[in-house]
Image (cartoon, rainbow, N blue to C red; front, side, top):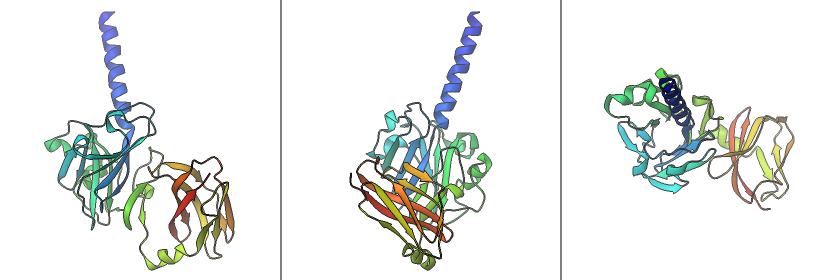
Length: 255
């Protein structure tokens, strides 16, 4: 009976450790500022100070980085921590997140990797590990300029759930085909859409990278009205996915 109880306790511990680790993933990065964001998508409070981040061949523990916002030692469910002081390659690079204790050849072990993203170039240092892990596809990279943001629900992987800031002429022209009013907004925020553009979806994101409103409501040559009456006062970004690309618009909520 005693051995059975011990076995159950060990299984419970291992299960808890696994679930705790699985909650943690990258939310975004801005290599131009050496900035990265990590979010706890679960419900259990986690200490991530021992977790490790790598870019190219450079790997450091979270505890050695500067805290911009949040608490890596007490990262509660749904919360995000902002960190900087980690030089990354603006011209093209990658960012990988590993479990605590990973060293040496352990960085090549897919079981130790929690999350991964690469931008502007493919074939970076940890790409093959992420491919083996099943969270990335060979040759994929996030296009555009910083910052690079994850907009999935925490269970979705790959480049399809990451985006950068558009840089092409067509994408910049798209900026002029969509407008938001009134801005600042208090109760209703309208998305005004030019005749040649189809809106596929939109989401309102706060400064911590958290999605506050998300909808697959679409419109062709018209207007979408978004109720922001319950949103806290502050600065946000409206990320609008269209038939011609993705547009990021700054929004001020003034309750």
